[in-house]
Length: 138
Image (cartoon, rainbow, N blue to C red; front, side, top):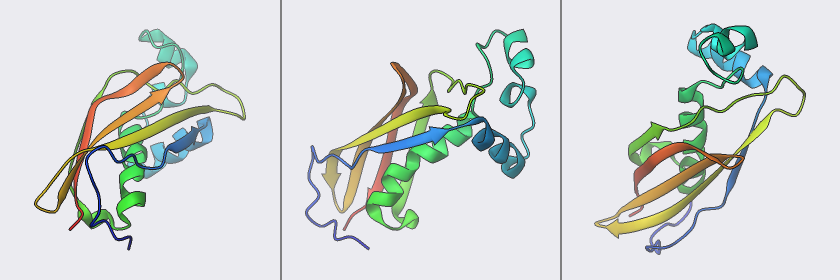
């Protein structure tokens, strides 16, 4: 487990890049038992006004938290995690998929707990808003 005793406000975590393909979305559908057609059918997604198949919001939320769990080395150190879903991750029907880029910055450290601000973008769009976590560092 990494030594996080010297963590300070302004520290940036290593950037995380997440590749999301249709295969990723289908596997998550099975794992979560969420078989809503917007996650595998362009026709169904477009019928409700989406531009195409979208990744599950909970997948995006969970995958983005990996920036924190990788950094602290132990997921049980995460005390709180919050996000707002701002835009869906639209997943093209090709082999490349799409990339979600996650960044995080320490916004405060107090009594052995670090607060982190997290951003997640897909192209030019923020896909998570007000994302933040609190982790034990001491």
